[in-house]
Amino acid sequence: MRETGLPTTQLGNTGMEISRIGFGAWAVGGGNWRFRWGPQDDDDSVAAINRALELGVNWIDTAAVYGLGHSEEVVGRALKGLATRPYVFTKTGRIEDGAGHIVGSLKRDSILREAESSLTRLGVDAIDLYQVHWPDPLAEVEEGWATFADLKDQGIVRHIGVCNFSAAQLRRIRSIAPVESLQPLYSLIAREVEEVTLPFAEREGIGVIAYSPMGSGLLTGTMTRERIERLPGNDWRKSDSRFREPHLSQHLALVQRLERVASRLGAAPGAVAVAWVLRNPAVDGAIVGFRRPDQVTPILTAATLEIGSDTVADIEGNS
Image 1 (spheres, rainbow, N blue to C red):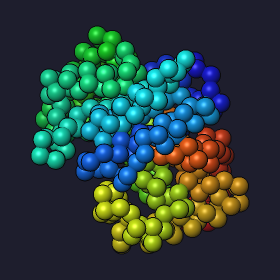
Image 2: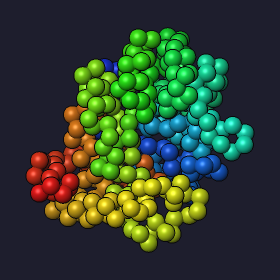
Image 3: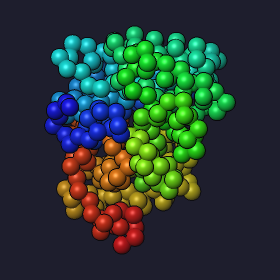
């Protein structure tokens, strides 16, 4: 077990004791690719990672495709020289096709190339958790998962998991090798996994780390209509349906409820949104993206924030 300044829990049956909140490195990838978050300063990124580690975060989640490799390079820079490094989780299966498009590939040779490239960019001798980014193409899922099992057998990766898989897709691959973790989209505005997928993962002992618990920034309390309109044209959220009508009005009403609850609890609205995700018994950890060091402390309070059933009803508008 690694001692941290935050509450920890075991990630499924992996034996890894992880802080309840992890550092999400999607936005710090910056770069000229389709799903970028607008301009990002690498020095800010490294400072944010360092601040999170100082405060007890003990795992970082990234992906080879974030910034087309740049996110992993930034994480590798932040890890360099650390006496004790955090757990490093990354993903594969999304590649750039040479024409500016992001496509899926779970072919064995593609995964093997991506794994070696990730090791180099991250500067680590093994990846603590390697994840299939999407079940795409679906016809290649078995080939991809068998390759993951081989990578684990070879010691190139220590644990293997998947992202964005349904319960049916988890059942489909588990005969090849046990699925050790699942990374689903889960927040107050994305609850589809509650009915089947999360209960399945809990029953099967599959660790769960939820991504976008603050709705890609929408639930932080700082995202207004005016700010959305001012988002850079190269920020992928500009055209995301969650940030447009008819959904936006509903989401901003939810943010108002979060702000009222947060004021009562002496916390940030984003921390309340993350605490709501962590309240689900199937969820071991939540992935939170930080772009500057000053953003870290207010959200980490989510790891110790207790919200009871009455507060949940207030948040969800059921009181």
